[in-house]
Length: 489
Image 1 (cartoon, rainbow, N blue to C red):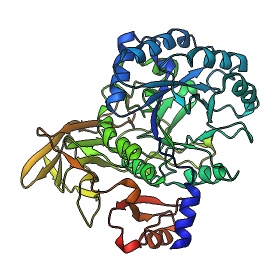
Image 2: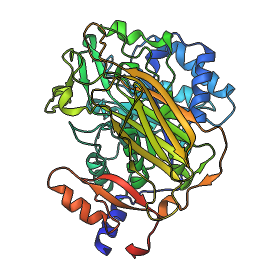
Image 3: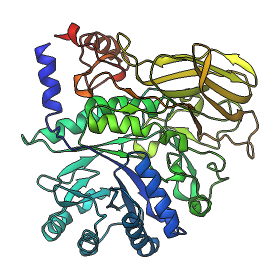
Image 4: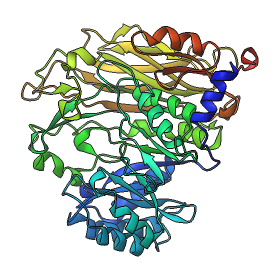
């Protein structure tokens, strides 16, 4: 046991006391934003325990000049400590000239809302490894803290950001890529911070951008936060706040921000009527647990999400699961997606869950229960296979026969828009009518992973190691953290 504990300490050696959660924000989608729109988005992000927006900007996008002054004005207007920082996108319209990058950092880092790390302006990128050498000059001129998406050479980056937020093929999300980043960041002998990606979903069908694939969502919004708790990197970036074209938005639907579907020549707008706001209802608890080691549930909450059609009901429209553009083996959607309703709940104590589809009761189970051997306050997660059932979806959490919260969701049907499947998720949430004051029974740092698995032949290794309180990052899917540590000492 001492050996595996030492290995984990080495991988996570850079942990510090200050943790932060960011959300990836597509500036181009704010072309028609008013100041009030910016203020509302920032207020909603603050309510969700998000610390800053990573403002993704393509070079020479005309939206940038209008959006940035409004964004920084809104951040100054909204009550609360909220930051903004630049994420320079080198793939959208090509590379950014280094002089322009330096000028923008110098100008906006003087604003009170610009996010600083250790008194340095925080800056990130999307793509751009061919321009890595530019950042030597940019850093000299701006003294910025540079969190790059890709490795750009020794001595250039201050932190690394991974975009690998989704699982491969039919698998659940693992931590293999996270482990590879951690290993690289520790190789110099002086560990550098890691910015870990967390995302709830992925589906895009925008032929104009040569994009038409999905990655499996299913349990990921729950599982990835457990993995984030276990790894506890210095930074987390949620992908995304408002990237509607890739279906992983957690911000509100805005009719004035849907240009991607016209520009991308989409067959139809697969975001209309598909809210994702409910996913944010879990964030105050999961983000505060990550940042503060502990969190309080003030209102018991239920969140449910699912696709609105069985996977075999409609045409694929050529959508693949995985994508050859990322050098991945491709699958059909039917090989990867499951016809299930997924639900997570923040509960003060154990509770029952039930699901009906079209008035028919279907089997619903908790897949993950916090701390199976002690006080069970925390994050619950489960699923229900809907099979051939169609109709209105109702998910109910109850205790001792009394309803705590109930989500009445959009109907599942075999109806298809132009014969095409919509692989986006519908998300709904509900909160209890009475308040509680339930605190997680133990600090996050006092919890260990006691239940995990891995792909193929790693399943046995992971299962064995996890029974001793160690889940190897290189291969594992995390299922349970436990507060009862006595058996592991």
